[in-house]
View 1 (cartoon, rainbow, N blue to C red):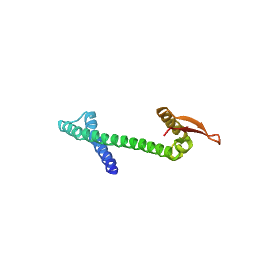
View 2 (view 1 turned 45 degrees about the vertical axis):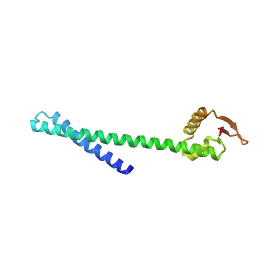
View 3 (view 1 turned 120 degrees about the vertical axis):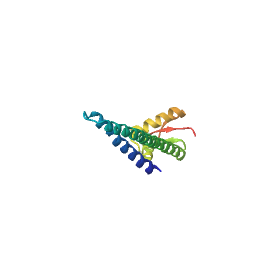
Length: 133
């Protein structure tokens, strides 16, 4: 369904902008006839809804991708918590979620505040987040 939405959004945006160019071209011409002005209205009537619909589809795809990214992060976070008995490091989370270290640390800091997690130091000297399961 996603590829169909992408193709539809692209086609609708392209068609919409092509038809919206007709009024722009006609209205900038000095020698436009009344028939040309009617063509401009027709271009607007067809182009505007197509462009709006294509834009709406593109925005819905963007929101869907963002939601999927959040869901992926949440599932990775909870899976790692279960595997580590409530303990998780920034490095492990960053590797599993394929995130930069700064982003992974920010995410874990937010979750630590949300769930009142503690910080601990491993035997090797590494810092980990300790969540109560």
